[in-house]
Image 1 (cartoon, rainbow, N blue to C red):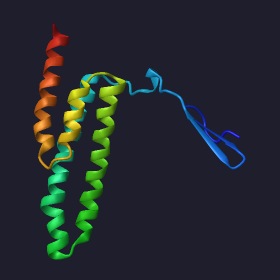
Image 2 (image 1 turned 135 degrees about the vertical axis):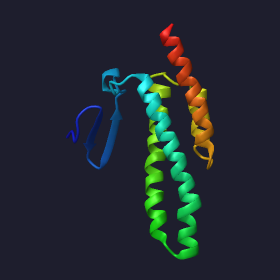
Image 3 (image 1 turned 120 degrees about the vertical axis):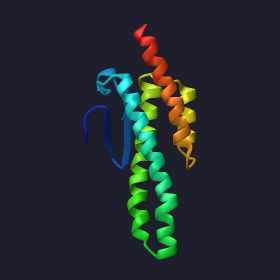
Image 4 (image 1 turned 180 degrees about the vertical axis):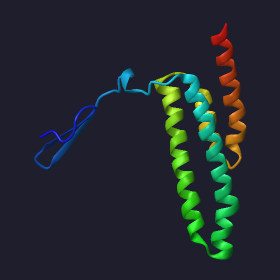
Length: 138
């Protein structure tokens, strides 16, 4: 019995479940230029950095000093979504589209773990984006 369609197939045989995954084809990737994805990556990276600083500098003190745990819930959820979006975009650009060198993707990913890291990583992304623009204009 097949439960879903391609690329993920579930075949249930008795009490065992077998899952197979087929590699995504290039036409499944977003039809958007690498430059626009790089600009979007910068926006997501900076937003993630701001949300991390808000979480640590505003929401956590509100929770522990003034007993307002909803601040951490709200800001923490937004930060989590932005962090996952940043990770997804880094993987998309580094692996699927090869628009971002693997070393740069690792540096940006590691920088996202530090409170002010995304702001320093943005300079690296901006340099990479500017060099790509210069190379495409020549």
